[in-house]
Structure formats: structure tokens, C-alpha cells
Amino acid sequence: MEFKYTINGKKYEVAVGTIDNDNVEVTVNGETYNVELEPKPQPKPRPVVKAPEAKVAQKTDSDGPNLQDALKAPLPGTIIDVLVKEGDEVKENQPLVILEAMKMNNNLVAERDGKVSKVFVEAGEAVMENTPLVAFE
Image (cartoon, rainbow, N blue to C red; front, side):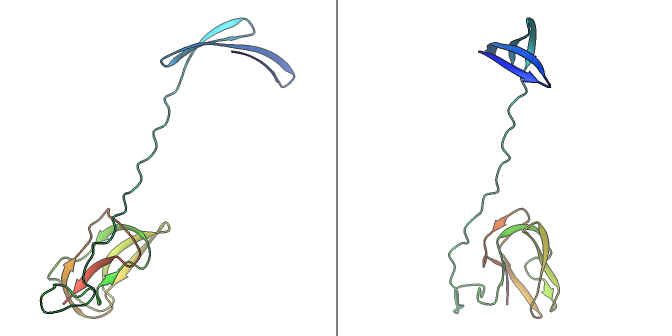
């Protein structure tokens, strides 16, 4: 392929030869150059967003943690850290989970005193809005 360019008033005749793997032979105004091509950038992997598991919304005698009172994600994001584990006693306004959403870290806190019965998420996990994060007894 041949091209003609004018750059800052100077004319250039450029011929691009065959491309061999990562090398190209290019001739500019009669002088030949061996040009190494840079590798194409690899796209960054996108986080996989898991849909919340189907769970019963109200507690009965046999269906486990009460999701109606569970701490839920206020908006989609990525869990940065889980600060509690199952069985922990927590106080009102105690940070439980750090959620990154819209490039900001959000401390999600306990709305009341209680005991953690179930932790549904772990650090690095992407969550959707209203995903249960922590359930209480």
C-alpha cells in the first residue's frame, strides 16, 4: 500500500510492505525501515455479576434466615470487605460491609442491635441492588 502525506509542509511518500507477524517493512521517501508492531492491548476482564439466589422473602419456622430484615445492597456494586461473620453480635450503626458503588466506598451499617445469622457475600463479589448481604436473628 502506498500513501502520500504532507506534514508541516514537508511531503512524504510512504509504502507499507508485507506484515510478517510483528514486523512490517515501511519505505519513507525511498528509505526502508523495519518496524516492530506493538501487541494489541488485551481487554480488561469485566466482573461477573451474580444474580441473587432465589430465597423465601419471609421467615417461617423452617426456612432459615429472615431476609425481610436482612441488610441489602442499596445499589449495584462490588463488595470490598465483609467486616462480620456468622454468630457475631453487632450494635446499631456498626459497619458490617464495605460496598464500592459509583467509584465510592460505602460503609453499610447495622440498623439495630442483633446477632449475625448468615453472611451471603464475600469480598470481590459483584452484587445487584437489593441483594441480601447479611441476615440477623
